[in-house]
Length: 216
Length: 216
Image (cartoon, chains in turn blue, yellow):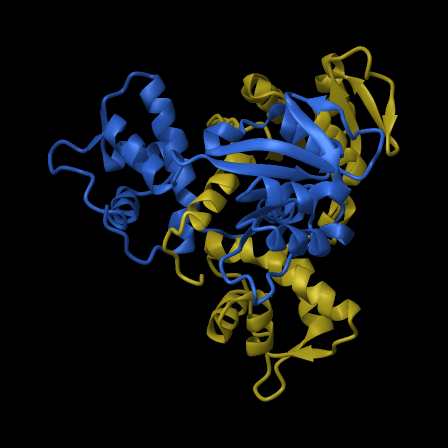
């Protein structure tokens, strides 16, 4: 599996490829082509070829792509077969929603514990995940090496909690706080992936408003 | 305000520009430069100049950008001053979280009503928004022209509900269902903006895994 420098735009499209390939796989489709995959995803055939060539040679002239093989390769590329342990911090409505409904395992994540400062929540269990006292977060991380943290607490606690998590060895923070968490220089390997709801809604607003755009 | 064909990548960066400009404005900063804005946002100065040039000439040689002016222009470009009416469909944990905590107005949206099929929720009020019976959605849309719909119900109801909303005149759907809603050909003006949590988590997983990437 060859890896060149991959642009962020390509990285962000990989999960979309995977979703469509998973659907084709469920539908029993064995092979596909750049143009079929492209028309399904709203991309050009040449875009598809270009994206997938960043990761090596998958297609075969005259045959196209083997759905199962490409699906498995993409899962490898996204490290979905190496399950990582995670904690969630902040069990408000959004935290609840994620614990209850989000399929972490399908994205290669095992949600092991949740933390909140509210005594009314501590000790409860949601979908098999126990809510622990936020005061015990550092001690927990010392006992249970944890790679990923889901941050679903109010923005004003985001930075301090993120740094506590990084101190505790967390390598990736999935940030829903709306606050742009910064990574101090002493944690060169930590990555933050923020879901900024307002960015998404503003893009929708722009597109409805009739803003010009390419077809991607 | 000149508008050329704008790439999706640029459109998706506009809300980020706006967030950083809003912060600079709050901090009382009057002017900035491509390089200062770039280092704050993790982009190169030339990227900043290129992005903003898509929308006209904002900067001035030797002066840079006026923060207040650029902030206002970006709000115009994103149509944030033209408030649009919205409904939310599906008042589960995520729907609750958005109604309670998300600042719709800051993204140019007025959330007017919520809908759910659960009789236990119908008639209740969350953060000033009344939950109405989902059976009355079409009738509501006929009475209250509505531009935006927030879709927070289970994926299996996504497509049928989306089409009901389009029939009712909704122009933009903010889709949290995890299902890729399709727009039938008879609604050429409708846009879908999906927040796919799993896509975001898989990107995080990739980056933690040590996947190669450019610095954007």
